[in-house]
Image 1 (tube, rainbow, N blue to C red):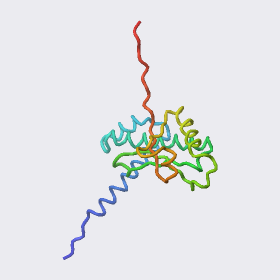
Image 2: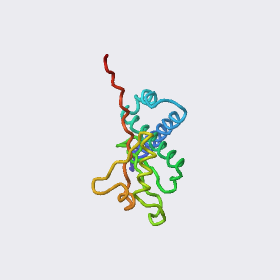
Image 3: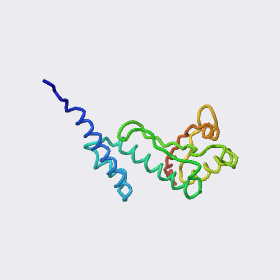
Image 4: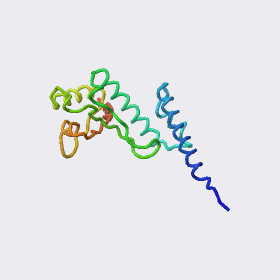
Amino acid sequence: MTITSATPQAVQAFLDERQGLFRAFDHDLKHGVSANEIARMAAPAVSRPVVLAYLNAKELAADVHRILRSARLEGIFGADITGEIGRGARVVHLTLVVDPQEIERDQDTLVMHLADILLPEGIRLDTPEQSSIAEALWDGESVRLRRQKRQRAQHTGS
């Protein structure tokens, strides 16, 4: 007698549903629902830190794509999110998306320009441990992007 296991089908159904849940998060975020509200609604199914990390990464990547597009750098740089949906850390990386030899501008000048247009939006590039940002990108490595924490205004008593 052959026994057919139900587990593989159940696992696939779970993964499909999880994918659908995160697509719903994307939809709600795109339509103006706050990340905190989405995390509150999702609490029975997905932990708040996982939802917020996912949505923060999505927002950061979208902001970087918008900035690159408006600066006409979208064909040179790209931003990607690491991690599997619903699991693990969600990190946004910047990469060079063209052959470095096709770029006519000086790499350091181009990276400084990029950093200058990201900074007003509160986004910074992490400097790699072993090289400069430009060297890392031109060597085919990705560079992590981070949103700077907003500083609270300090109240000074008078």
